[in-house]
Amino acid sequence: MNAPQLQRRYLLPVYLLVAFYLDGTISHLGEQWLYTPDHTLISRLFMLVLVVTVFMLPEEHQLIWYATGIGFLYDLYYTGMIGMYTFAVPLIIYTIRYLKQYLPDSVFFIGLIDILCLTLLESAIYIMNRLIGYATITPIEFISNVLAPTIALNLVFFIFLYLPLKYLLLKLKSER
Amino acid sequence: MQKFFSNKKLIMLLIILIVCLGFIAMSVGLRNNKKNPSFIRQFGNDVTGITNQVISIPANGIGHGVDALTDLINTYQENKELKAQLDDLAQTKVQTQTLKEENASLKKEIGLKGTLTDYTTVNASVLSRNPDNWQNGLVINKGTLAGLKKDMPVMSESGIIGRIVEVNKTNSKVELVSSTDQSSNGFAAVVNTKDGKQVNGIMSGYNADRKQLKLGQIKTDAAIAKGDKVITSGLGGLTPKGLFLGKVAAVKKDDYGLALTVYVTPAADLNNLTVVTVIKRTIEGE
Image 1 (spheres, helix red, strand yellow):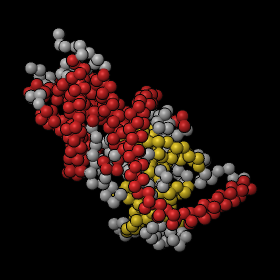
Image 2 (image 1 turned 90 degrees about the vertical axis):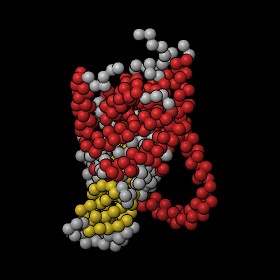
Image 3 (image 1 turned 90 degrees about the horizontal axis):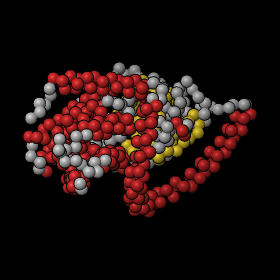
């Protein structure tokens, strides 16, 4: 194993945590615009950071554990239902790490994978909430009122944050 | 090229899925009974809550600064409207003060320690909001150390917004009345009709499309009209009497034409919360 070691790798969990907290803060400050009866926009910055990390730092082998940690924290702190994100987030990250070897590292594909991840995550969370009775809307309503607006919001985040995030992550690699 | 799911991994995946489903079932069970979460969960939540303030305090500061700026633009218009209400308010305030004093002295005279209307309050600020909105949850910055308990009602300035569903040492989770969960909006309520009658009922859910609470299964002869005030009745649980829930928006007959369903517009704006008040009832009810 002579994969390049990441210097200052401890910063990656810090980025993830900041994204995790920013999700809550964005939802709190923008609740008038994000949550209306017609649509629900869910901010998923932590997913964006995870997806970009998969492509920018493929040598980070701990990423699955970070994903598990963030998922667990999400369950603990935001929803109080341990098991949903703890299960879904690492599984999705595992899947895209596998898919990555067939895909070119271009912005377009990273954006596409981000959309795929969001679709998987939102659907998984919706199905689990439906099972325990918190979500009452039908699947069609879910796609039009929750999934589509959420993807739109997170694409905006992707467009604005991709370059700064790429810079921050590659910086972890270069300073050896 | 690695195989995507080898047999070993597939079995592991299944085991993890089953463990996670077990944890979800446990969490749902915890939510439905009165116990506090286990020490490890509380500890994790407390640490997360404290570190959250590093992000949320500056961010909320900026957000509220912007709010203040937009408020400033609306101030002139608001000022005109408020002035009109002010004279009326002063009179009501003095009257309430007098009645309160009279009430207190009368209670003292007959030796009554606490009634359903007595409560103390704890102010808390909102730390963050659950981004996925299935549970309509908030995290507030007070917990058991401030004397909070599970199922206590939570108000904004104008009315009830929800209930506490999980208490940790330094923060707790609030579920808004707009949630589909019965435990957060099942308040025992009273409608005060215009001709002085009182109609009891229990909140039975939230209609997301109309943004209104439902007060179901009411059998009464009293005429409930649009605009009648709905308050908590103080029966059962930890909710005191006389907290403002909202105003009647519509009255409908149910499918069999026997009972009434009353739709109530919540008094509080559920989507603009920065500071909330947790209500502690003076007399404990089981």
